[in-house]
Length: 198
Image (cartoon, rainbow, N blue to C red; front, side, top):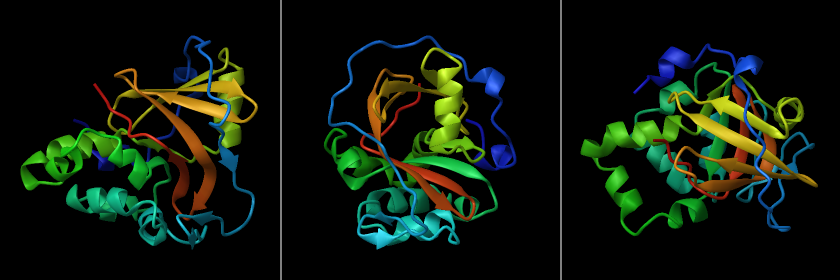
């Protein structure tokens, strides 16, 4: 498993963001919400673009499980570092969709390598705003393939009308529900499912 530190200064190569289009239908209710205001609200709290990823996430009532997992994996210092990072941040509800006992198991000390692998699969080096992802997708038949810090791939498919679907390496699906939550060291996109690497 590749270290998050090893990729902190990496940039995303547009040449690597190639994939075939996926034409499956997307639920009409699944839409991402680009955030234009300076301090957008996530989980009932204002997200300051002057604060780092962990500081902002710690204020969100919807991301307490994610923050606990980041702490258990020992990734707080890294995600408070300069980055920049693009983080796809699952909500508490997303973690709740995992099989019973999964989260409790993952935060145990002996599961730290597995937890770190899963969390770093949600992080892409660089600052990728919605417009950046859309631009890459338009050039590649509606799909942007991103290489994560973990080393695996995420496929983001433009489903039209502001709807974006993420497919992980196991075939799982997630939708971006809030995009472009700017941070001092990157950007966060809120998602509704946990992504799983191979």
